[in-house]
Image (tube, rainbow, N blue to C red; front, side, top):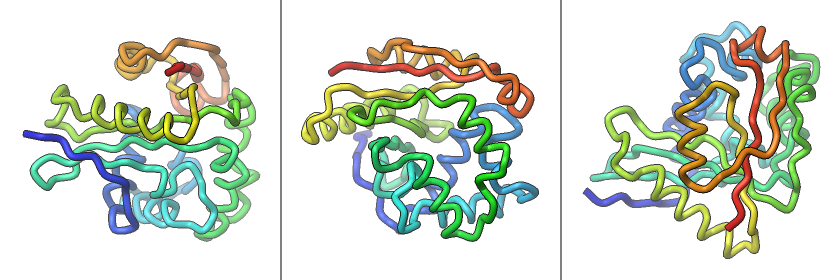
Length: 208
């Protein structure tokens, strides 16, 4: 079965929302979006994420940042790549206001992001939400997405890619390292550990 890679469109928002939440939870009961959309159930969170992918402000979850992998007409995976000079924390908070989330600056999300801020280099491209559906593991979906993303990055003039992974997410960390990423810096946070049960985040980079 061949893998087809395409850019996401506004019609892909339900699938993107599902993959964003899957990526954010990464085996945890609580994700950053459970904090942002406090008190919402999964259905409500997914609806809010759909809206977040189509805001005027180009946040990191914006549909235009995503590639989608499909096999035999079925969408099976995603990879987000965004420019931190555009899709920064300010753009994310602006997007939250657009979809009706008030006082987002006062939430635990903001405090966590301040504590775990790597100060990303704006001349790099950031990869996020590298996900595939269960049942399509180890068939080359993620590799195909990454190859396409790196090709696009080169055409845009980028030579360094970065990604952020939770400390303890061994499988994800190992996969990025297989792709050539190397650990750059680690930040531990008591608040992060309190909310998510993980001790913090790891920044990885890849020169290509």
